[in-house]
Image (cartoon, rainbow, N blue to C red):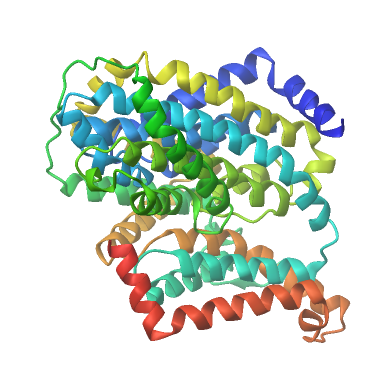
Length: 499
């Protein structure tokens, strides 16, 4: 009964004209972002953060969430029609989806992707509603020591699950932690790493970091990419899958949904890891494994279900613990902080309309996505053909306007340009920026909880070991690092990410 009451509260918060319109705008924009290669949800959310300052908290979070899971839908369109994934999580979908399109089955592939995503999104929303409250109740028992250890575990998990070199992932995390220290120390009032620049006295706004690394960095990289986009089919037909197609897709959709729900919660996991894992497992268990890579419908159903489920369950640690599981969730935490809301378990008790409004809006957003995706495939197909040289000046303009609106300072634009250059260098050196952004968001909070824990224990560092939950999480962090540092597992890990 309590759950029904909470869902009714969420419906009451969501079913206003303005919130429904912003939800529709978010999923539409998210789908468009997913369709257009080179413009991901991270850069888009970063660009729109300044615009959410004047919106109520529930409205801004509903729109930003819609952009995120909408992009998971949209990325499959380009993957299937052009063999050019609009989102990293749609890379796997392109393997079989594009082959289906070449055989004249693009409509069938797009329909199965939409059906699988809708089912997975609905289940993931239910999982979020069922498991978030008890997790939030548990988190309310946490003290400063437990929070510090939890954040340490989150950063370690993000390093372990980051693609590419482990050493580079650790380096990016440490750099993110250092960037988070820039500004004035709250306790002593001393300036740290400001280089006597008054503009850095309040630290670097995370919107500048996110826009620079993910917005400008991606623009520079995409300008290098001369790859042409050619549609396999100018007109997509046959959107209704046959009964045999649905029968083949049911089990992959169920398995993909389960995998996405579990892996989406993990720090660093999210949509990409979910879709890769679902495809790999489906290839092993499917009776039609020989067809994989040549147009197997299971190769579209499983990863698309997994990435949408992963996108929505990644909200669980963000809403209940205040821990971002991926860069998008880090931006969501930033949006909460901008609105004057402290992320964590207190959100559920102090802002119940916000908490349950986001959950209910996800189900409504999934309905909007079904309505948007299938009838508007023609529009998405035309958008794919827009040359990138016409898109990037607009992206640059929105980035500059958004950053300037933060403090009305040209210095912030120069700083964003510097981070854009840094982001491009990271991409060229194959250094994944995600651990940096997670470290940057978690760093100041970790420092604050560390100080509180030591203050309450009279500077006794054993407080982190003596408290059972804190000790367990630190132990898990140490085990994860030791295991992944073993040469055999490190080689296996690198092979998996290459594959």
